[in-house]
Image: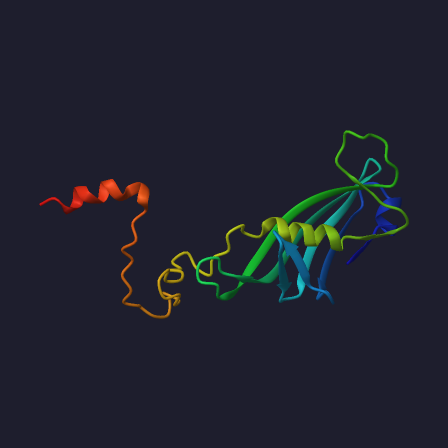
Length: 168
């Protein structure tokens, strides 16, 4: 995914809109040790404005990523929406500012876009808020079937408290 700054960099105050749709050849993100597949084209919409020798780029990124539910281990698709802002400069002048240096007229923003997608992914993915997960006894998905297992294992630290309920 490239942005072309040729026209913008020559005229201060010039604003250029862009709309990029790209289906990456290797649409994989490594996130917390998990390889995630991007299952839809990545859409990047935004604008670039030249001001004071800097190019301010606003991005709105949308994508769909295939995930595995952390409770029931079923696959599902998580939609990602990210709004970001980046500043690009031709020459590095001040180390205190947060900007990216570019050379030439084209800037590849693929790594920035993938980083934004990864930053918006949930740490504990759930297929739904009401996911019941797996039965700890038989391992069946409790979203699909109601098993008749009884979970009577008591945490040894709570064993003394369970005796309070037995008194009648």
